[in-house]
Length: 259
Image (cartoon, rainbow, N blue to C red; front, side):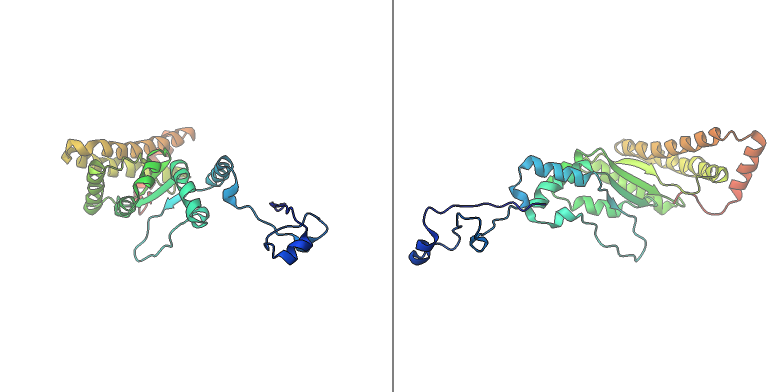
């Protein structure tokens, strides 16, 4: 890539300037005297704002922000995309575009949203404003057993969402494993419909009206995954006898398939 240069011409002879104490940054008019040249390099911020925005958008297309579910006693380094570390001006220009356009994936285990709540509460108003415009905010739920403590964590999140003014448009998804085989799909379907659906329904009955809207979005994510599993089973055309046998196998499999 060629180096951009700015040249300034002097109206005086270079020899006369040497005797008259001319400024050191004066450039000779003759290109054959390289020792008399001084290159003034352009910076990234000398580009037009429109060009800088194009560069920011190109970088953003290959970026995903994530907040992983941290295991107990596990320390994870903070994820910082490179342009945010380049300079204060670069961060100021790039951050709103980053937060308003790139996918943001938050992994939540056993309905424990406390880490997410801490992160959101620490954001500046400008960052929240950008995130409100983002329609790619995903909470990916990993669950194993639905205990009373887990339901308490979920209720805490529902209260936070009802009282919060951040108004971030989160969308819920269910993270699953063992969904590539029929037995695994039956096990997941059993957990979704007979385990989590029942417990969430019982929780819903006890909740006040202000918390119902967010819980409905959570329940819809479980329902959506159940429909996907049923559709996958139907596509494979499992016969009734084989279906009953697989259901029996699924009941005997240890552990949960929702992680």
